[in-house]
Amino acid sequence: MSTPMPDHVAPACQTYWDWRAACNFIFGGAGAGMLMYAAAMPSPDPRLRLLGLALVCCGLLCVWFEIGRPWRAANVFLHARSSWMTRESMVAVPLLIVGLGGIWYGSPWLSWFTAALALAYVYSQARMIQGARGIPAWRHPRVVPLLVATGLAEGTGLGIVAQLMLDPAGLPGWAAMLLIGLVVIRELAFAAYLGGLGPSEAPRRAREVLARCRRRLIWLDAAAISAALLGALAAHHAWALGLAGLVTTLAGGWFKLTLVTRAAYQQGLALPITPVRGMGSTRSSARPGW
Image (cartoon, rainbow, N blue to C red; front, side, top):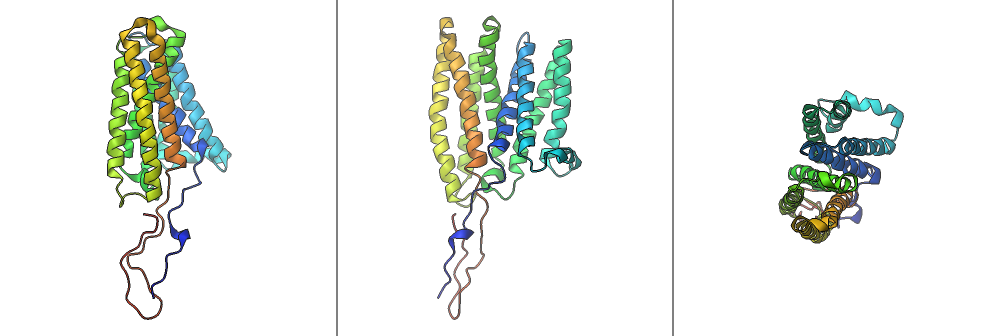
């Protein structure tokens, strides 16, 4: 008689990274995306860059609070050869220094250097997620372009909202088309990511959570694209473009929160051959929860 598989060996959602760790990706990704958006402006507004740097700092502060021993946070710089969290922290230091220098001196070259460091920062965050090998939904290589794409979209959306509030006249005419393009790229990246998460790539519950998130994100992104088109076609409907940017940012943040806290099911137990008790024949491999 074969031995039944107990329920506790099925994949369980991780609890080590909570909403505070998710906020590092939410604030850090949006802030870095805003820095790249600000660098592309014809005359960069220093307030946009300052807000982007403040968001990056907020993300780092959240993850500092999430650490069990926050006063030992300096140890994160000791593993540059093996840890993408270390590389993220090492990129954050020159990002803040160069970003503040660009604001102080008003140099366009420093603005573009800041944007390059911001892109490296978002990439490091994405690779940090992928580096968690025990979480199947995180370790898939297609999660990297998805997180980079959503960071760019969120930063651009938030940058448009901030610019409409601070200096509406300085908003370039191509901002709406840029936002629409980045939202479309994010949707394509999400579709490719889910297409790669087959039954053999991630637990069933993780795929179900991400599928529900995908359905809702489609509606949110469709609403953002419609609002951005309305804002681009009529100058007196600039509020619609701001609404599109806000929806884009909130949708991306909600997706990251879902990915980190609700879709992060662990590997679980996998047996190459299911054992039996006493006399009888063995069964094929078993992966409960997959």
